[in-house]
Length: 209
View 1 (cartoon, rainbow, N blue to C red):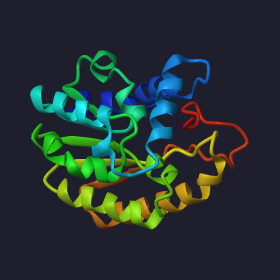
View 2 (cartoon, one colour):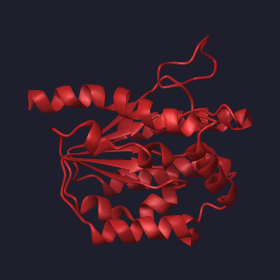
View 3 (cartoon, rainbow, N blue to C red):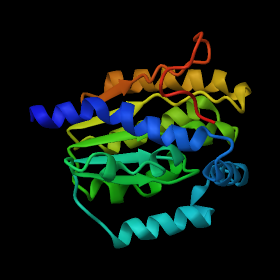
View 4 (cartoon, helix red, strand yellow):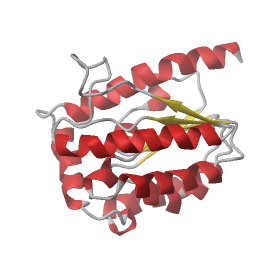
């Protein structure tokens, strides 16, 4: 158990640093791909997106059991979690461009893995689609409720953006809502990644592109 906890202590820093490096480099082909997806997803109905449907079908065909499930959007999908942490039983259930309602639609695939711990990073695509922060938080709350049987749910703060700074006020309100939601759920912990553009310099994790 001590070893398991030790691995988790570096999981976010190393893994999300790798994911963010891919997503935030504007000279990277992956950046252009992700930005293209985001631009086409000005609706929160991710189930109408071909990439979303392809990934959901893939997850359905390759169901697995794991101690840890990583859930989220491009920042999760783009990280090679099992390669980064081969000593941990972990599966990647991130989908580029996904939002809270998209995860709600596929949540059965996450719980089917019978994880001990679920990490979630979501929200920026919903805000970019002009969804109200309070509405995003309400859907996030449904996710947390449906994960009540999981030992621990780690809700990571939604990262602020450098390319669409007008959305950062809504992201800040969303994070405040997530803090409140986690305070009401006994198995939920809010993890603040401290990526606030108000800081004098970015943290090692940086910002969402």
